[in-house]
Image (cartoon, rainbow, N blue to C red; front, side):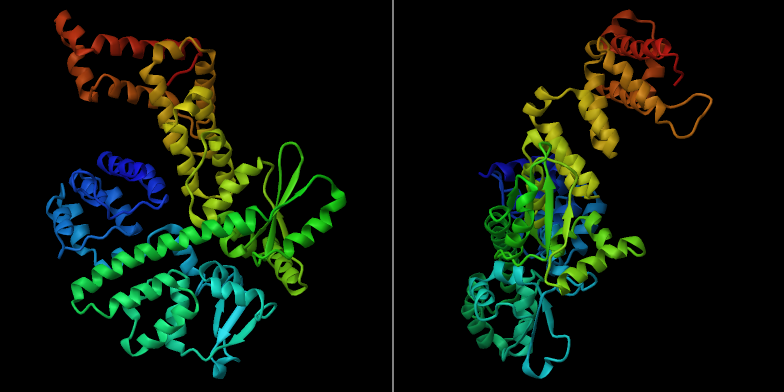
Length: 512
């Protein structure tokens, strides 16, 4: 059994939405079954985790009530709210989008706001119209035949005509851009569609078409569509992974001095990746590396999208980008100084949603994702920081707390507060706890007669969890006179920990 799938099932049982999202991005089969024949959706539904249920459905989990597993999800739901979500979920929507990166790639088919397309394909009579505005790098990634054509007979061409019928061309290009299109196939186009899919080396599409001709039952057809839509997505992820490794990372240029700067730029511009911009990264040793990239993909990060689309001064950046394209020179953009490995982790995430973040780089990736305004990747880095034993052995809990404050990662703040609360007596021996409380007090935005220091508040909250108390329990047990009962309940130990916090605040002359 795949470890990531097992970990996903566990995350669904306990309601860990961030970790579930990270694991889903590794490409696990959301509709698989564990050793007890339970799907992730069934586990999340049974355990009452509504946000995880919504996440699974958005990412492609199927709840087909005509099938046994779908019926189990509905009837096994812990509450009516989850049951209503499942009942309303139509199977055609359940396989709509499997990954956030799929949603982004699909959007490129119609979103021309950044003008990132570099080739137009039209039937002969529509050559003067808009036609289909596409991306060479994506066409070459998804089809070996198109890669060959783009490098030879179509080399340096930006407009093409084709005798492929418009309806078939639309199906093919939507398939390439991962837009769910199987329900749009008209059987009158079947033979032409199969012929073109074979000519263009679209193996999975032709495989689906060959199976489709033998299916008449609508329920079986829906099941077949769900199966292949998942396979289309994972095949595209693998193709993009290979593309990034072979045509971006391996084609990067190291610049050890300024003397070969222009030469490096020219080499990167002429690589087989069909880049439309170059990404410059400088590490902490002041070595430089240039990566051939694509605005269509980098714009997944809000920072780059804003850079090329905001009005006023930022608009100049877009005009510069357009001028570069018109002059056949590529614009050069840069990241803040970082290890090359950090930049490559970011690129793998943006291109094919990779969530593999080695613990050694988790903090740097978190900081870079924060700079890029990419919240989902911040969550993935945070998961690594809280779940890697190696990371926790290398870094102190205060390293985590401070970077959590810097990047506004509430998950990490709460994690740090919980760790401190559960081992409070040892942490009070460290001067750093006092420093952390002082820093937290300095972040109070609204002054009150008695301020709330967030770190102290969180530690107090987790002290309740540590001793399994509810707030009302404290008042009740405080009036108890039976010493044996007080010792057995744990209230005395709880009060000792609370006294430690109060003494620290007195020592720091803080009232909270």
